[in-house]
Length: 570
Image (cartoon, rainbow, N blue to C red; front, side, top):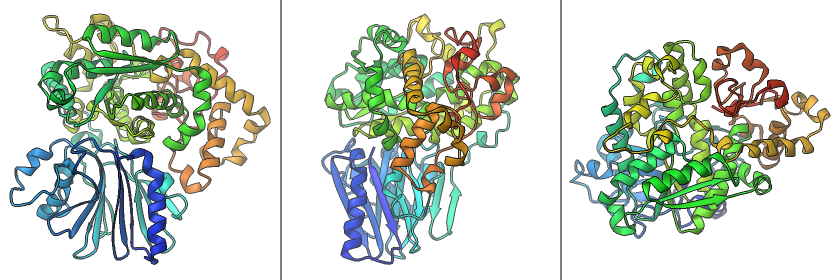
């Protein structure tokens, strides 16, 4: 991951303005501690903070075409850059960076090249010949990007909101799968997959195709020139990522540099479900496993830093980001700069426990579509910003563009949870990797029940957060919350506490409006809450709130003392 900042069309392009942009770019230094770059052309500035993953020696940014008339600053990875270069033989490449291909593709195809990119990315490109520019974000929003407007008519783009809030009158989260064009005067969608319309697909389930597509997604993400590992919680998704990476690592270029033993990492409170399951998976795979611990108090002490880096007050995002933030700090100390992670599977396959109540395949499919469309506000944001806070890049194979197309084309009848057919959540994935002759994982791990990350690190983590928030927020404060916070009004003391921290760090109304809201149970969207009338009395983003589904669900909703959170985490 890197940090990008672009400011275009400023009225004041003096030396002091240049110094101001350098100062703002440094707010993103945590994302890219390896290099700082800035290119200015008249009233346009492109700044970059680099985390060197591919071609550390020569891939410094901004990047250019041959005559430096096209300048680009990129955050992310282009996995198919070598294939794309094969059709750009007339172009001269200055670096070994995978991202340089963007400048040359623009020369060949103009603005209509973005869908050719296979990867995770946010970029801003300036064409000095006519001083036009484009900005684009990857299909799902794995890499963050914000768009802002200055009072002088300038347009700003940045990887994180903190680089924009002081100088922009208004800012928004740049929508995934979109391009901003100065020539065409605004945003348009470049990513238009079949599933986006939410029409019900009918392709028969083929476990071999699903497995092979996922394996390709993992293998392409082994593209690295630096040490890496896998975040392993012991649940299905991260375990499959680790199993596939472990199976193909020896054949990769990365193994020739760093060895063929995979490193895996897990964090939790001592005795947590994840620590136990992750060790078992690591022992089975033979990885070099790193078990990391934290205490509830250590997590509480980190909350302000976590909210500063994640730029959200969403309850579940803060709950899950905190252990991930603490884990990333320890991973960084080991010299690792890139990790694979299992985000996205639950959204694609209906893996959250509330999907047990999906009334039919149509509503299940529509809910998965809603979940994927909102990933950039929740799990993608958490995975990216929690790791980038310590200069680590997180890659997510389940959100591979080809894999999503394959998985979302499956008739959703196969994704329905059917106890009568012994199909639990994400059965289609489990079955695809259920190979008796050459097993990927032990059976009981392959069929382990869904455990949300903020639960799996230790159930007392969430309880500790609630207790701490209750000590900080009075009944009177919560009673008058709608007057203090009229937008996305918090309805729990925990939510109120996170909101107070966020408002202290980001006091502008434009900042708070980048965070979504709405009721949720066990990570559902607001629409899915309608699936069970009892949920309206026990709205909470924890997986345990799926009463009667999770083996450790709350026995009595009244005993949980949980009200509706001000934001539903998807």
